[in-house]
Amino acid sequence: MNILAVDDEKLALEVLVNAISEVVPNADIYSFRKPSEAMEFAADFPCDIAFLDIKMRGMTGLELAKRLKDINGKINIIFVTGYSEYSLDAFRLCASDYLLKPVDVQQVKAAMNNLRYPVKHESKKKLQIQCFGNFEVFSDGVPLYFNRNKTKELLAYLTDRKGASCTMGELTAILWENKPDSISQRSNLRNLIHDLKNTLASVDADDIILKNRNTISLKVDAVECDYFDFLNGKTSAVNHYHGEYMLQYSWAEMTTATLGNT
Image (cartoon, rainbow, N blue to C red; front, side, top):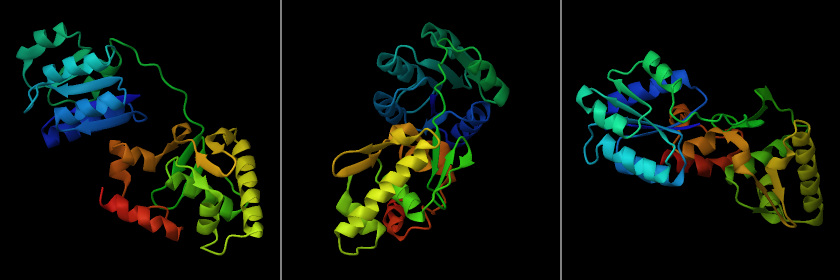
């Protein structure tokens, strides 16, 4: 479930996001203080629900709602405001609900239980990948066991590459610290890939690895990952990042530096 939260007041937005997070902790919540940025985001990332402040600088919540409905006619609009006089205009836009500030958990819960367009819950992804702190992998919340440390590191690097295809030469250079590429190293890498596939198959998740003749990559939309959520602006992931990324791998320091500038 993808949820937009838009309010140009910082404190009000934080209160709103916290209330939504408590009611639907597994939702992907994207918060914006500028309506124009929210609209640009929604054009690229389909959203199921939008909590919109009505009185904002630059573009009112009513105007933003009209534009969001042009993008997705079945988006649930929930207006949040301190001004009750807008209620008639709000419901003319077929809003799901109209909440008066200060918003609390009970208001959000009631609104979520009465959506105009019920949201279909997607099945939970089998694999959860943690990049912040140490790199760890979980299957339905249970740590995944790897027979070899290098196998785990292989999955870590594929995750770091965000779905980009990695050549055999690139992987051997990373995993064996720039030792000369050789037939022996290529054989070791093939064994690691085979071990990784078997490890993932044990939890019915081997389909997350895409392998071609000379490249391999991760199917990023088949896993849950705090790093990917951070890059997509998910509030919970942004708040969870404290400057530590895949601490056990030296090659991850470059990404750590990049995240620090984000």
